[in-house]
Each structure stands twice: as C-alpha cells, then as structure tokens.
Amino acid sequence: AALRDSGRFAEAVQLLEPYTARNPDYQELALLYYGLAGIARAWGDDDLRLYYLAESSVADLRAGTRSYASLYDLALLLFDRKDYDRAAAYMGSASDDAMHCRSMVRIPVSSSAAVKISEAISSNIAQRQAMMTTTIWLAGVFWYVRWQHRRLRGNHRQLIDMSAQLQAKNDEMQAKNDHIREINGALVDSNRIKDRYVCHYIDLSVHYIKQIDTFRREV
Image (cartoon, rainbow, N blue to C red; front, side, top):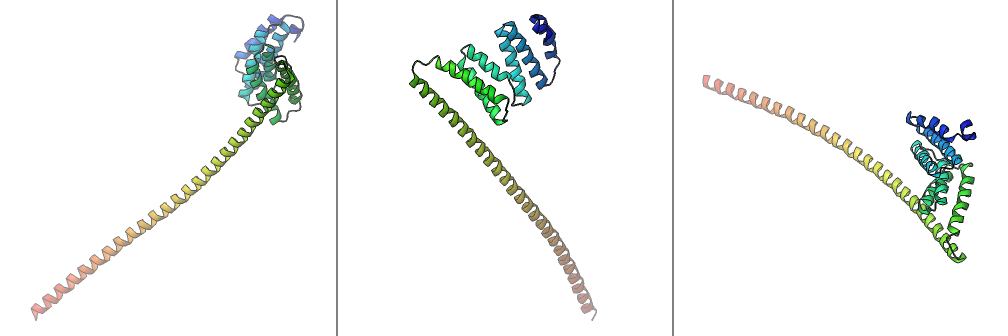
C-alpha cells in the first residue's frame, strides 16, 4: 500500500506478482489479484487492470465463493470499453450470486452497476419508447431464464427421485432373486436326499428278493 500511495506502482506490482506463483489457495489468490488490480487502476493501466480482474474472478469462481467484488469491477470496466455483451453476462452472474447469498455488501454494489449498465444502454438508444421496449424485453428474458432454471432444477430433482426409486426396486428384486436361489438350493438338496432314500430302498428290496429266492431253493 505504501508503494502504491507513493506512486511507485511498478515496484508494487513486482513485489506482489511473485506471490501468485506460490500456489496459494483460490481465495488468497483472488484477493492477491484484486489488490494488483487496484494498483493497476491507480497506475492508470486499464489493460493490466482488466487482466488482474479476470484472474481474480476466475480464482473466486474456483474457490466457490458467491460474495466477491472482482467480477462486478470487471463488468464495469468492460462496459466502459463498450463490450456490452460480456459485461452484461458477467454482471448478470454476479448479481445472481449476490442475491443468492443475500450479500448486504454486494447488493448495493449491484445496484450501482445496474445504474452504470442503464447509462450505457441509454446512450445507445435514440428514443424513450425504444429504451422501454428493450428494458421490458430484457426483463422478460431474465425472468424466462430464471423460470427455465427453476424448471430444470425441478426436473433434476425428479430424476434423482426416480433414480432412487429404481435403485430401491432393483434392490428389492435382487433380494427376491437371492431368496429364490436359496429355495432352489434347498430343493436341490431335498431331491438329492430323496434320491438316496430311493436307492437305499431299492437296494433293500433287491437284497430281500435274493433272500427269498435263496430260501425257496433250499426248500
């Protein structure tokens, strides 16, 4: 901070940049790049600031956090550069994350960004009616996307439930098959025992018949 405040921006960047190669966790990496973006802003180097904000945003996404500032700043910088498509996409994602996590810090930032977006759009619209039509259309698209998102989430939950039910049925059928195999095994054992008894009975009968035949000859 002292180097930045004293205008020694190149030295500040040279001091901080090596830390990005030391494999810090994603949250630390996001903060580090965001700090470098602040130095680049004070330096007046928007290209370098754009790069650092992009790296910080990627690190935030990989960290899984939904409360951040880098993506907001990146979207505003892109709007300043008239890159409206990417700026709108990034701002929409950042605003959705802020509302999802109910960030009381980021929601006002989102409102400020919305004003910036509105000014950028208004400067390119000649008539008030055209601006209102565009706004209504964007709102319709926004709500349609949210509706589709909720519907897909509902379908996903249904698929998960169906998968669980099918797994339960499969387990039930497997248990029944195991029981049937046990019964078949018992029947096989029973048939084997029955065969032994029949053979034993036949042997006794043959022996008895031989004895009777021998006795008759002796008589």
